[in-house]
Length: 223
Image (tube, rainbow, N blue to C red):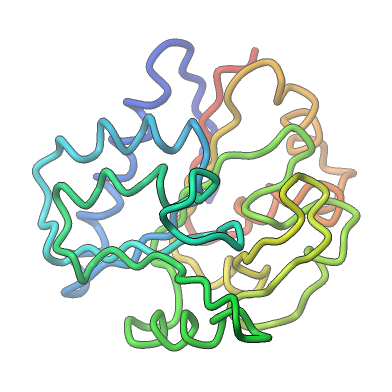
């Protein structure tokens, strides 16, 4: 089920309401909820609204959808854009990707083992599509969208700088229960057109993968 919602002025408030609704739905079924979040200006604005909500924060665990291969204190870190949640989440419930630069795997297995402790998947994933239709570091017409790893992957050739990143894989995304996808601003108009075009496959517009989830919401302010 995919529901497309147009919201001209209050898209971030609407997205936050959907996240809250989804959190409460999952918590009615089990005792914890795992949320995947990326970086980006759109997500950071949602975080500012979300952290004011009255939620069972002790039952909420947040993992990264993608991250640059930099320390979490670096200005380029995606984690810095969501760390405002530390004001409401217990310390152990916020799970940044910790770069282990001295290791050939950059610490990726450690992060996979961490999310496996909580079921090995996101219950809810929130992503904002890029101008080319990418989500996380799953890029169109790129090896990232074809990667068959079960959890995460490392990229050294990201089409969008910086080149070195980690990301959820397609398989990891597709195990999610609820997806919330944003197309914000006219700069995303072409990506949104591709998303709506049934003749274009997900390898040319990775954002389409979200619509294949059991429950998916697409929010846009693009006419």
